[in-house]
Each structure stands twice: as C-alpha cells, then as structure tokens.
View 1: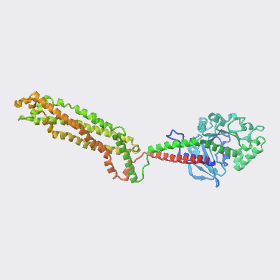
View 2: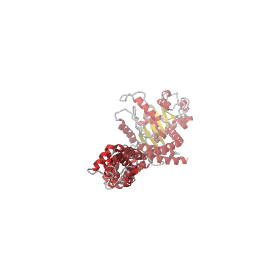
View 3: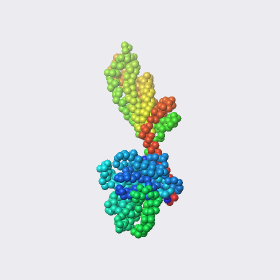
View 4: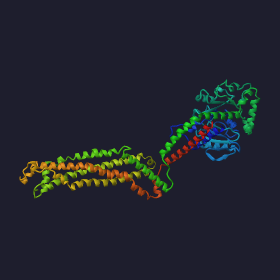
Length: 610
C-alpha cells in the first residue's frame, strides 16, 4: 500500500505546481480533500527535532525565537535504492544531495518572502520533497511554533497571527494533527494540546507526541500520559528522545541517534513495557500506516470530487473556447467556423428555433395594413378634390364620355401615398434583422473571446443588411409604381354605365360635374384603390421577404468572407485578439483538467486493486 501514499504525494505535488486553489470553483479543491499531517507545537517543544528524526536527516534551520516563519510542506518519498536527495518546488530542476544546503535554502526562501531582517510570518508554504531509502512515504506540514508573547522585532499581532495560521491548517477535516508537547512541562499548559482541542475536541484525528522524556525531573516519568491516563486521545501517545543540543553541535549521526533512542526505551524500567511503540522510527511508520488507512477510506469521496470537478472544468473550458491557431490557415478556418456559428444562430432566430423572427410577421399582419388604413383614401377623394382633379385633367376641352385623365390622376394621387407605408415596412424589417444580428452576436459564445472579430462581424452583417434594404426598397416601390403606371382596364369596363342606372345619356356635358356624378367617380376610384391595396398587402411582404429575409439567410456574410480570404496573417491575428487573461485562464484550466483526469485514472487503478 506504499504506492497509495506515493500516489497522493504525486497528486499533491501536481496540485501545488499548478496552484490548484479552486479559484472560481464552488467545489473543494483536490489538495484540500487529500489527507495530510500537520505538525503543531510551541516554541522549543522539540518539534523540529521530531521531524528530523522521522526523516533521519539534519535539514531544518535552528536558532533562537521563531525560526519556522512559513509553513513547510514536507513530502517523504521512499526509494528502493540510490542516493538520497531533496527537491524544492520553487527550484524544480535542482537536486540537493547536501542537506546543509537544504537547510540554507529553507532559510533563504523564507527571507525572500518575509524579508531577511523581518520577524513576521507568511502563510505562503515552502514545498520540499525528500527522496531516500531510509524514509517512509509520508506528507508532513511543519507549522510555525506557537508562542505566548511577542519579542523584540516582532509585531504585536504575532501571537494571534501564528495561531490563526495553525488553525487554518488543522481545522480541515482531512488534516491529521501531530501535537508535540515536551514531557518536562505540565501537559495542562501544552500549546499543541490546547489548540488541537479547539478543532478536534474528541481527539479523533490528533496524535500526541511527548518529547524530552529524558529531561524530566528525577523521580518523575510520563507513563500515565503515554498509557492514556493523563490525557486521553483516540490514538496512543508516542514518546521520543531527541538529540540534545550538544549532540546537534557535534553533528551526531541520525542513525546513531535513533539507535540510542531505542536503547533508552528498552533499558528504562519505566518505559520498557512501552518500548515497542516508542521512538521516532516507530512514529514515522505508525503515521505512514495511519495515513494509508485514512487515504483508503477517502477514495470514494475523492473519486466523487474528481468526477464533479472534471465536469466543471470541462464546462469552463468549453465556455472559454478553443485556443487561437498558430498558422494563417488555422486562423482563417477558426474565423470561418466562428462566423458559421453566428450565422446559424441568426438563422435559428428567423426560422423560429429561437425567438425574434415572429416580429417580422407582425409587421406584415399588423403594422403594414394599419399604415395603409391610416391613409384614409375616402378623405383624399372628397367632393372638392375630385372636382378639382377632374376639371384640371380636362383642361380647355371637357371630357366627352368619361373623364379618363381625371380617373388616372385621382388613382395616381392615391397610390403614390402607399409608398410611405411600403418604405416603412422595409425599414421595420431591417430594424428587426439588425436587432437579431446583435442578439445573435451576443449569443455566439465564440465571439465573446475576440472583441475585434465581434465588431468586424457585426459591422459586416449590418452592411449586408443595408445593401439588402436598398434592393428591397427599390423592388417594393417598383411594385407600387407598376400599379400607378398601368391600370387594370377590366375593372372599369365592369363598372355600370349611366344608361344601366336609368340615367339620361343625352344630358348636357356640364351636368356631369354635378355632385352625384362626382361622388360616383370618387366611389369608383376608391374601389379600384382598395383592390390595388389588397394586392399590395400580399405582394409587398413577398418582396421584402425575398429581398431582405431570404437574402440575409442566404448570404449575410458572403462579402465578409470574400474580403477575409484576401487578408494577410497579421490582419487575421488582429481579428483573433483574445484577452491575455482568457488565454492564461484557458491554459490553467486545461492543466488542471489534465491533473484531475490523471488523478482519476490513478485513483481508480488503486481502487480496483484493493
């Protein structure tokens, strides 16, 4: 099962390298869901010595006051053979075989973040991996030592700042707490136990470690605590004997120090019966085994989290769109595809798949007929206006039988007024088509990536609509003009003659200017105009649809495509001027997605092998 911890270490390193902090996501991050062991303790509690004993190397900075001023995420990787070495996440290509250099780099990297002369702390962690055949697979987080007062050079808030940092790590449900307490001090005053109890009151995820057992006053021992009577935790306490300051000054070998620690517990009358579960070597193995059990129990939850996160990342990546192609052909193809997506959205609005196209039908069914009705031809054909136009048309020679020229003038004067509603219908449809273009632009997600292309496509589409409107205007007005230019003779031939009405065909020519005669002329003209209007109410919408709607569906961006094929590489690149922040976001999401897919494959392989 060592491979399980190694797998988690691998995933944690990848998460750290990618900065997988879940920005913009409502889901917990993979890092937060992976179990880890946080080491907490007061200053001078022996915390650093415990870590070095577990690792078997002297690699941590030492000194007075707060030495650990940044969290140290320490990942131990057991290798079968070869020389042991260390790697820092911030120096990925450099291997440290000299652990004195590791100690110096920890100190230097701390100073880079907090300042060399500063006593402040930082929550930005240092990530260190150690590869050795002498370690167990394990992940430990070394946190700054808890303190009770600020010393010279430290801000007054240092006590609370450290406590807040420690709590931010150990309050996570997946965090295993390694509480370091010195045996030569009253356990009731232990900083580690106090802060652990705040987040884990039942001690379900707290491991107690007693240091400095060999430094207890003569006649006292820590048996009650180690046997769980002094302060009970779910897991047994572990006692360790660290190197003394003299040993450290003499650079006593860690292997020798472990052997001496083992001998101490085996030879001590107080602790001999506990010796099998005492010492830093046992502590490391016990923590590794427990971490394996915890990880194994978390696998179903991890799988669920990974599946949900992959779905979320795929959705986000789809929303961000494809990356920009590098070559001219790829850029041209990409622009064409985006334009086709916009064109398809526009057509869906017209065809009814999306809303908006129904407004065009409303123009033909409501707006255009209402505009014609408002022309009020009956007022235009008032008695005085009919008499005026008939008389003017006769000139010096009154008409002999029927005032044909007068009829023509009356009809033309009525029909010419239809041009206004006809043009208004053309403009109304044009306005609707423009609105649908802007709506389709907004609904084409790919265009949101490229502001310049969005403006160009919108401008090209509107220009096409303007050209189509002019063609439609000409065709529509031509329909009106054709009705004025050639009258339907059959209509007038079917009109009843005076003799059929019982009139006197021999009455004076001047009697035909009487009111009854003029009213009959006005009535005949109105009937003819209404007949023409009925026809135009059908033909004008057909003309508008043919010249504007149909053409917009057929070739809205044809002119733009023609120009596009003639553009140089630099101009194509300007059209695809994606926001650098979007590019960076897409790259980040793609890397995170790759990480989660890899983690999914690895964890499923482990789950199936259980």
